[in-house]
Image (tube, rainbow, N blue to C red; front, side, top):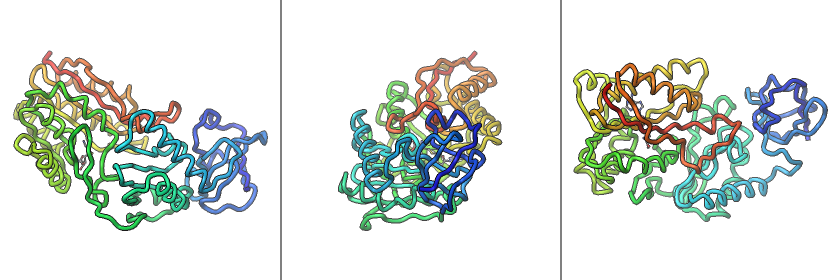
Amino acid sequence: MTKVFLKRKIANRIFNGHPWIFLNEVEKINGNVNAGDIVDIYYADEKFCGRGYINPKSQIIVRLLTRKNEAIDASFFYKKIEQAWQYRQKIGYTENCRLIFGEADELPALIIDKFNDYFVIQTLAYGIDIWKPAIVEALQKLFSPKGIYERNDVPVRELEGLPQLKGFLSAAFDTNIVIKENGLQFYVDIENGQKTGYFLDQQDNRRAIKQIVKNANVLGAFTYTGTFEIHAAHYGAKSVLGLDISANAVAQANKNAELNGLAHICKFEAMNAFDVLKIWAKEEKKYDVVMLDPPAFTKSRENIQKAITGYKEINLRGMKLIENGGFLVTSSCTNLVQPDLFLQTIEMAAKDARKKIKQVVFNAQASDHPIIWGLDNTNYLKFLIVEVRDK
Ligand code: SAH
């Protein structure tokens, strides 16, 4: 096995369990390596650190798979996936769940979403991509699924020297499926939907709006396929309008409203939410509840300030649209904007909007996406409900 030696002064991060090793943390490599090879990592004092996969083309040169001296083979991946499944079952996620959440499940760069009998996979680094056959075999053995699909049409793969692609990893199947969530039904377009087709990370937060939407006029922005909005209608909202810039998402959202018999309450329109929030705030339109769930605003540290400005702006406008005593339901999935910073941003927005806010709920993502302390990017979703009053 090729040995990779770390520099003497490395970040505590690695000692403390973080699985990434950056190019500039490596002192020397004993032997030739190809992308995807399994290598052994040693500290500068020659003590064993762990075993992982290497990609000399990537800034993250090694991602550790284990701290033990154990074989990395098909049965390793089977065991890891089985463990992750047992954990999901233990904490109550069985029908739909994120089965593998990458680093949080000690399978760096691997995502597997389970939509009942269907599985959607992303392999986002070279060294995990080559294990795809073993991963598929493990899913076949554990679940006998109706279908497995890969959504590797993700730009981040190019940093690893991997092509973007999508397609079947099992016999072909109809990729338009229906899943159940909180007693409602939703179409999921596995082939052409965003990310893996559906945002499972908000599955518990969608229930958190139950009380505050009763008899409310609700505005949702960045609705995707309308899941929050359809929950609102189901929980007793008087009217719900959802906005998304994607015409496909809006079409799917309207179909979802119909599927649940809520099309008379819930309407969706294709609009740019940034523009609309600005105009409607000026026009002094009012809603009892405003819900915002925008896409990530940045993936790079240089742009954090821009992301914060973006959050401040949409939340300020959202608050202005709320009746005195109404509620703002607001989310952020930008992992570089950590929870404290997000709350500070909402506080600034309230100040500028001249509103008093009261925290009702503050959550992260659903627990099938485990948060690992020390792995900051596993703590990525912020979900906040505040009551909003005039000052
Ligand atoms: N709330 C959804 C997920 C939203 S994902 C759920 O729980 O399923 C973010 C959505 O914002 C995407 O559907 C994307 O199409 C949409 N979006 C991005 N930019 C937008 C804009 N300027 N105006 C409106 N929607 C936008």
